[in-house]
Image (cartoon, rainbow, N blue to C red; front, side):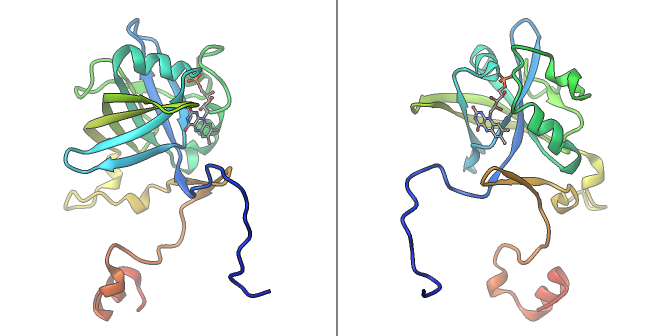
Length: 201
Ligand SMILES: Cc1cc2nc3c(=O)[nH]c(=O)nc-3n(C[C@H](O)[C@H](O)[C@H](O)COP(=O)(O)O)c2cc1C
């Protein structure tokens, strides 16, 4: 069989890999919750807009509906297990935040939603629209502010996200991001730049 012979494998949500993040949200009573979302994406840069898709059955959906706010908490290696846990248990049954030993903090960016302190990067979002797609509701939200662990900034204040040990999700499994093999525009870069940024040409 030739290497690139193709087989039909049906229709599914197969786009991979995807980010896996923890969404924290709060209700108007000030109760906090967190759940896992893999269907999240960046959809616009000016203004910066993200999407997340949530089933109506999620407690997180109720909280986002109530306040129009949520926080995207990026997931690193040490958060991988808590991230999975908050994605298989509902806040309707237990306080997942304390169960996982997580803590929260509030920022000036949002009125209600809290962020997960242990996450290396917190992205504070305000909902601008909700679209009912079928199984999921897709929220578009504008990013109102971002906080990152200070150790991720170099001496010039540049964010070094490659030091965050982030996790991605691929076909039902979590992966630690590994080897850097390129960078934006590297196909056009000079040998000197390649050597500097990748250590090889
Ligand atoms: C890896 C992973 C990815 C998930 N992605 C989504 C998602 O994109 N949208 C969604 O509605 N639920 C997703 N879930 C399921 C919810 O996180 C899960 O139902 C959770 O228990 C909801 O919690 P809540 O009721 O406290 O909001 C995912 C779960 C896991 C483990």
